[in-house]
Length: 309
Image (cartoon, rainbow, N blue to C red; front, side, top):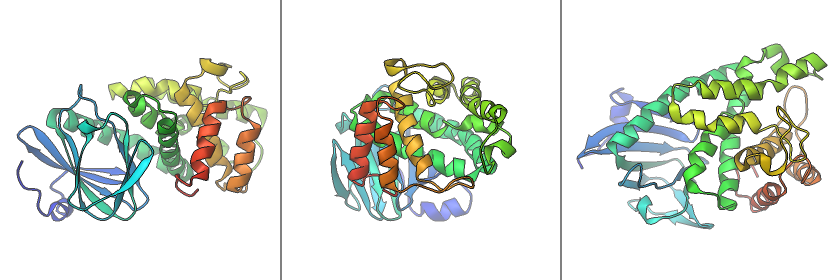
């Protein structure tokens, strides 16, 4: 496969493209025998998932080079040993990696597939940076929603083939706020009726942004952005969908989005405790929120499987 010695030194020299993620950064090292190699420098507390799909890649392995990482598969969590390699083709469900310290993982995948995915994700960094420049809270909030949503998806045993949609739909659920004036987005106090209508438009504006995006597969996640403020009882927006008319992806984002908003301090409100926020979720179960999603999310929180829980 070729050598991957001293990738961090070469990265500093600027010889390789780097993908910055909130869970760490990925350095694309190169390809050998049509297999791409990349170094994932995982931050302590960061996480990422592997969902093997033979339609995309035959080779998909992860080797821990340094640091401490837990891997979780089918609700069983074990420590990965330095030098150990996980072959994703051996797993029929989602495998999650959790950085329990800063760590480095060598990833190998079929080059044609992985390089295209890598550079398309680099394009998405423009949107990530744009969200961060508008509102730092929104940037970090979106990443927490991504992590929360993936955990609920796994707990509900949803198809791993749709995890990619959930990952990006949940991360970009608030991308429409780029089109909301900052004086409304960060207003300390109650919005006027007109301001509230403007704020509510972010779900449709965000879906439009996704559907016109140059990354083709991102368009398929627009429905999550569009529906994440719908309510189980049909009193949400923009369409007043109810019950199973709302996609399970959007129903998950609705619950975890509300929890994160309630437990985060903003200029216009104080944060609730985790216990208070869970009580509010229970209160909204079957009215605002999908009841099964609430139950699964509360289970995860009580098991302290989420960041900050």
